[in-house]
Image (cartoon, rainbow, N blue to C red):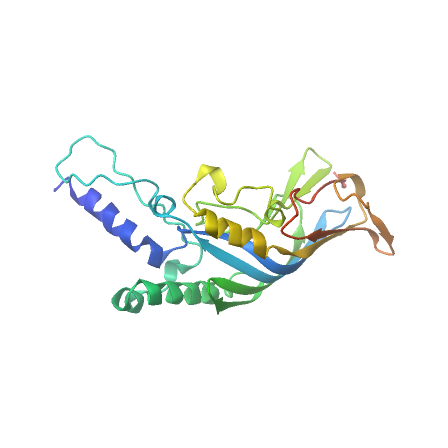
Length: 257
């Protein structure tokens, strides 16, 4: 067997990665309204309604590294492409490949929107053009395990907008790193550089929304300076999110073991 075949395959996949997957994208919020309700019995409900923006990253983020150009080199490790197949894994991109990268990018985004509507929680997902999606997401469940949004098992780069983590037997920690600009989006998660500073700046400027958390559990800590408001359903904390928001919304609750 020709030992050069895997290297050629990797280079081919790297060239197609921009059309077949979101490996070259980092998703961030635009204008949105989001809520999280956590009950003391661990039941929860989460919603996100608004924009999600896909920012283009550079080739390093797309391929996972610069591949070797020497077909005859032996013993060198070829950099495999990073295929972050968020939703496009089952879609047909043959027309996009034939008609060029620009049309392929639009076709990819449309296919991702169509695929997201098939996933649990997505009541609607529409591609609005210019790498912008309009999302209506709602889900309920029991906090017997961690919860992340957005999340897909095929994603190799994840910056969750909201993360709920179990701490010990009776604590739940909530943090929303995607709802703040303190995280350097231009560097990408896990040190994945490559997204131009211009794209990072645009993503930061687009951040505009509100995140509301309600609960009847004990609030052990939270970082909203105005504190929690009392409502008939328990306590409510509202974070107003803007391009000036540097601290991610965060709270720790005590729930039933």
